[in-house]
Length: 61
Image 1 (tube, rainbow, N blue to C red):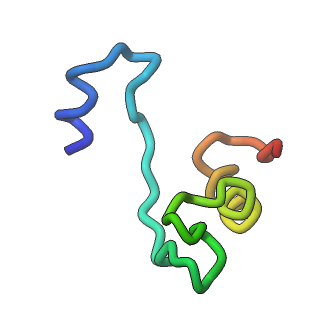
Image 2 (cartoon, rainbow, N blue to C red):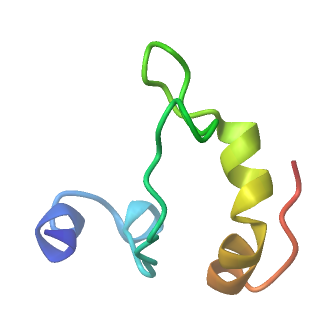
């Protein structure tokens, strides 16, 4: 799926690294709003170590 998606975008827009999370994004655990949108600030805070690993530096929120 990633290779297929990358065929349609420039290198700058391409997916180069991915990490599969074991945590479900739900309203109950605070990662989704009632309209099922991701609470970006909460996701960034909670997954900062994973984001740091992907991008090689601390997350700035």
